[in-house]
Length: 75
Image 1 (cartoon, rainbow, N blue to C red):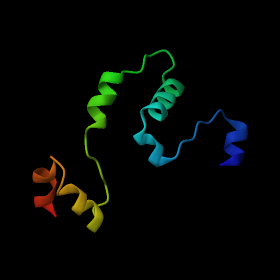
Image 2 (image 1 turned 90 degrees about the horizontal axis):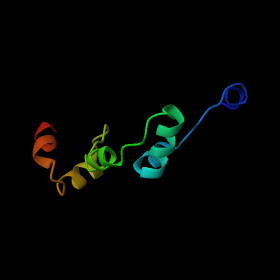
Image 3 (image 1 turned 45 degrees about the horizontal axis):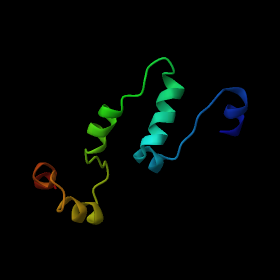
């Protein structure tokens, strides 16, 4: 990764930081500098519960979520 960073203009972010508006804004501005960041869309997407790994902890969390009726029956 360090060789790539030296050769190209690379922006890296930690996966967990993608939960933060400011990180996503920075990534957006890096990729699409001519397009304004859409805060309204961010707010809509931020409310979604997305988890690609279902384990005991996330199942427990899902029971408290408004989305549980859509996801838990599949488990």
